[in-house]
Length: 438
Image (cartoon, rainbow, N blue to C red):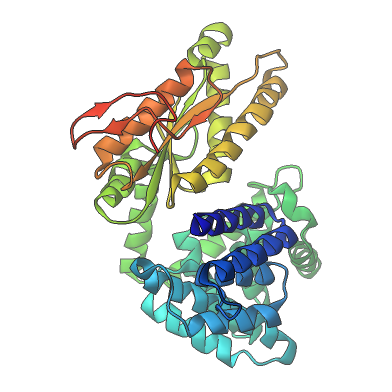
């Protein structure tokens, strides 16, 4: 029972950490450690690995890098609690250390330790975007703009429209003396309103305008005549540096993105879910499957027309992308699926954030678009956890769908995580009342 209390305290600390309540999270973690000492009956019990890891993350978040370094060095010499994901955890700790040594090294001008650590990570895992970005940042710091640019380009090809990477690319082009390429990026980024107050972006933007003696078209920043010219130069410059194989890969990636994208909402579609996510339910990784549905969507279409319905769907997709990043999919109509790679208690926190945002922002968006009065738009959801509640996708999806159905039949605008799906076998699911499945 005492161990359950300790884990509950740890989960409370996690929640506060994700909300940015760092002081509260640290206080809760201290209580969790004291509870651990009481369980073991000793004051000399080392801090639990998970508790220490979260403590390190908090100190890192508040930029106390000296304290964070001590914690992550300690963790680097210990065995993780989760042996199943041992390699991933060790890689994450080394990446934290690499970032810490980089930030500390920037003050002294020495980044050798950070470079050594991040090189080790990047060689083992060539798809770790954070490691690649840090590697590029270190090269940039050491004024190897050409080397940094090559890596930023790789990241941009893998992750579209990563604004911070685009800004860094623009700086590299600028320092390499390739002002038109830098201007192309800045001119297109000007459309992102929040970047206009970003000091790094504004500094480069002003410097390029001064150097090129050109005034960008602020009324239509997406595609003015100057930008079209720069895009041609930019494309020609990139094409020179690419092999035919890489060019072919770029074309294939573009085609695949179009194939996997829902045209109306811009998020991933059913085909993407079928090919990228469903196979993961054959592995041991914990996955929470979240079924969402817009409440009374048919009534919106019938009452206000399909154009209003499309506005609702697009805004729904925008909010979903903000909350779930690439892990939300439009399956059809008003039906959406989100996945969270963790247990359903953690998934519920994110799903609830999404549900509340839908309720608070979506109706306002529609009013702004059409200047009409529209009832509050809400959504319902059902969550099921793999493999805890089912050993294959079929059972988990039926369970999540059953919980979604229960949510809609019993008041809507809620997320159901319990009941509605006691799995008797691989093929039989018996519907029961919520709260009776523990």
